[in-house]
Image (cartoon, rainbow, N blue to C red; front, side, top):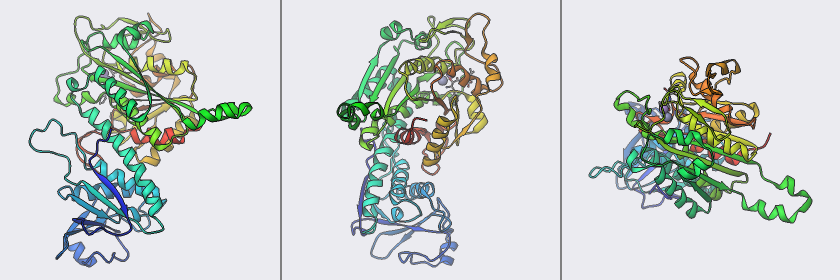
Length: 501
Ligand code: BES
Ligand code: MN
Ligand code: ZN
């Protein structure tokens, strides 16, 4: 499951073998002794200590000193340090081994800073370059040693460990989302999930087309009808083993020992052509291979839980199929019967994400978990409203939505709450079925969420629409051009910190 080739070490002093040393430099205050230049000289070379700035200073005898901007003294929190570390990784991408003081700089909990630094380093170095035959795009950087002091070594080490686990998961999700449609079909992502399950000790169940038919998953079957690739639903179960023993031994207290249960549902549209409502032939639609980014983020999240010692019970559903037109494809006017028995009139086959999610949400609700979160590249409307920097979040329970927002703030994967305005429910009324699958030109992100709400049976639920942040057009901070795997770190944080009510 290891994607990154970066090895992270922690030491109490810079190793002699490192080819470069990255030194945290604030925009004001005294300069660290390793920086041989004055503020005026640094300024003349264009380095002011701003976040994202780096300056490579060649040294006599030794290799390089790299000044890494961390902004205003006292304001360098984990988000700043993640971005600074990403900038350092980019500046050292042609260097094999690096050491840095970044994990010991900035303010806040040392293990949180170390985790953020490792995330920044790893997320800015690896690229999906399996299909490049000559030029490799991933950084040459292979070893980074974080310098800590005797009093911070333990915290830096534990934070760095968490950073490696989480960043590896993000990189895996990015790789999956960057893979071309023919390289990653629904069947293949299910096999991948199974492999991960074996590696990290998670229960993985795969549901085939026949099983989905038998289960009444009309959304999955309907969307898949036009494709020669069969659909797959993947169910992944994580249970904190500590609670298993506790439940048996404490007898009367067994009810309170039951861990909170969170279910995650990911949209896994392997390629979204729009179906019969075919998308126009615009090359930018190559990114519709990443319409399974929600499923990838959920799978990646699940892969970390055991290693992180997550105390909550977490179950995942990946709803995987492509959306293609053909003689057998679902048509406008068709009516699907979903897993929970509700009927849906198809008014646009390109509004397919909500159809596959509906079955996943229904199955999730049947288990009566404490909360359900879904994550989906769902609407262009959300991307237009909020842009590429943040997802939209909507839900039926403010306390749970607040938990999602907190996870977003803690991880710097930004989200913004949109209202689940019930007055707009009538926009998806159908004259022939219980509802139609599109609302119309207005409030597209909200009508999509109102559609999803029909399938959660009133259980606390939040929906993340990641159509905006799923893709990056250019490298920026810890983002790399291409699929971003947005939501992975947010969901890991939510899984770990989730509380019922
Ligand atoms: N996968 C798309 C949404 C999307 C658009 C994701 C851009 C990422 C970037 C989704 O299936 C879709 O096609 N949505 C339609 C819904 C419409 C038909 C109601 C859209 O947004 O146009
Ligand atoms: Mn679509
Ligand atoms: Zn889609």
